[in-house]
Image 1 (cartoon, rainbow, N blue to C red):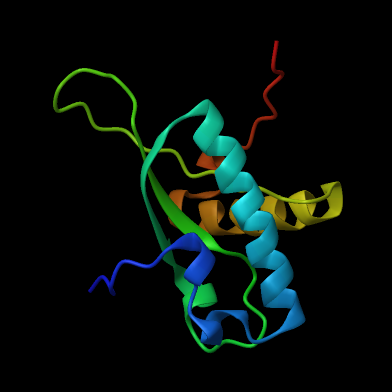
Image 2: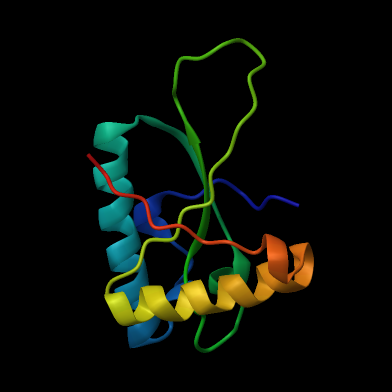
Amino acid sequence: MIKNLIKVKELPKEMLKSKNRKIMWKNTKRILKKLNKAFPISKVYICGSFTTKKKWPNDVDLIILLKLKGKKGERWSADIEFVSNLKQASEILKAINKCMKIKYGSENAKIYELEID
């Protein structure tokens, strides 16, 4: 299931074949570096279409294991989308809303914008 351990600097060449993929990975590395300063990272798994031969993957899917202190055995996760502009955010929100309506029903599909203090 999981391929060999690779270093961020040594991503397989087949994942970086196009200019678009190189830009996506460069920005993903920047995000990882900043996240690691705020929340120490234990492990990162890269998955999804970016690891395939798909010419134009939509994004880089990551599973990030954080080194957070918590109750032993505590389980939680958060799906987070990092986007570069408002248009992209709007497109993703529209797609998520559509999926939520299918999965949970129209009356239960709700998206809220949170105000950060």
